[in-house]
Length: 250
Ligand code: NAD
Image 1 (tube, rainbow, N blue to C red):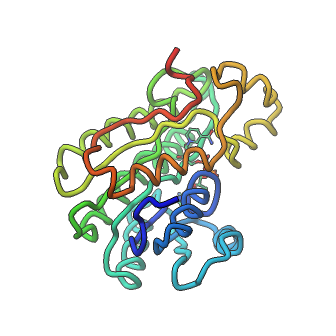
Image 2 (tube, rainbow, N blue to C red; image 1 turned 45 degrees about the vertical axis):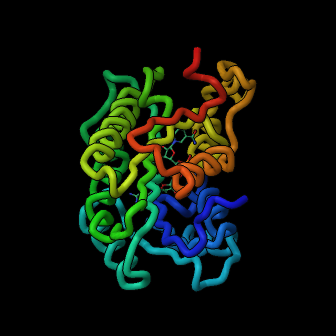
Image 3 (cartoon, rainbow, N blue to C red; image 1 turned 135 degrees about the horizontal axis):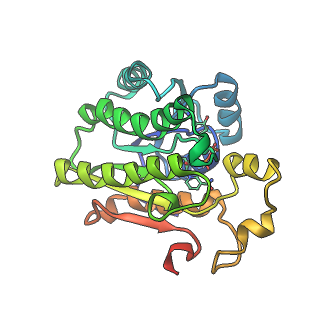
């Protein structure tokens, strides 16, 4: 696969698992220099082991993107190591189910801090490093940011905010920096494994509403992310791209 990412500096928040890790794998295979941002050193080392790449080409940066300090320290680490950012993928996120009547302020804050504040401030600190014309940002929202999902109103609100943020940044930074957003449906990652482990529904029940007849695989989202990041995709900005097996086509 040639996405034209050779020697590009790619920063992926939430890059140590799921969609972020699958994106890292494709970017590394394409010759990119990749920085994985995550909170846990253990997960970071495990991801580096899975990628099994030249240590000069893939590095882990331990940082919590839900705080401005965390975003800033990640940007400083990337700047020191590479001096610029060509592609930023905001994949860090959390999913929580909770009925509206039961949501606490702490739960609200956690979801918004990671999904919205983390995305916004990581963009803010990385944008000064995006010095090359054609640099690009890919935010990961969700089908839940496009339409209502049952039982997770704060998650829906957070992903709707990521969709709106993407459009706003695309306007502010055109034509120099393209900003797009991917909206996955359910994807077989640790995030979904936790949902299934809770036992509220089975994999078959989760897959039932999907016209394609199954949930997605992380690589299927990663291919779209890398395609959006590709310099070949130079006319696309402000786009919100569902990758959901037809779920939101209904
Ligand atoms: P995942 O849990 O495998 O990945 C999320 C990553 O974000 C994890 O590595 C986690 O450690 C990291 N993270 C969380 N909070 C962080 C913080 N404060 N600082 C740094 N890193 C942090 O799940 P995933 O499915 O790969 O999710 C990736 C993105 O895709 C998320 O934004 C998620 O909301 C979105 N998404 C996932 C699905 C799905 O079904 N898997 C569907 C729609 C949208």
